[in-house]
Every structure is written in structure tokens, then in C-alpha cells.
Image (cartoon, rainbow, N blue to C red; front, side, top):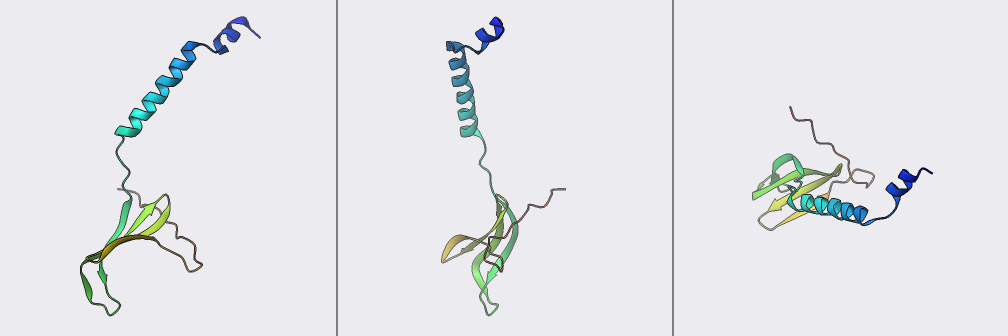
Length: 99
């Protein structure tokens, strides 16, 4: 092996400092990065089974990591539940492309 390559790959204080600097930059970027907000695909009024509207109630479909979730908000509470397919698995969704 070439002597210059051996010296380059040998452990030294410089590698430790560079590693700590890179980890510090990643940590600072993670702290100051904006939080990802799930995309709301549908925002509809919430209704009872008889068709009457729930006062101040609405529901939305959220896409989180490619899976569909229902966000239900009403005066009685708030819930996020997975949207299930007929076979019981969580439905997949994609966020439509912005124009």
C-alpha cells in the first residue's frame, strides 16, 4: 500500500474533529429545520349517519409516509385513525402534484 494512502487512512485527531463537526452540523440542521406538515387531501364537513351536519366538525385525509389517515375534528374530540381498505390493510395514498 502506498505510504501517502496509509497516512491518509491512519486514525488521527483530524478525523475525530471532522466527524464531530459533521455531526454538529447535522444536529443544528435538524433542530432548525421546519417540521413536516402532512398534506391534507380532503377537508369536508363531518355529518352524522342521518346526514345532519356536526356543528364545528370536519374531517380530512392525511398522507403520512405514503399511508392514508383520517383526521376527525369535532367539538367532542380530535382523532387521527388509519384509513383501512376492505382487506384490513392501511390504504396507500400519494400527494397530488402541485401545479
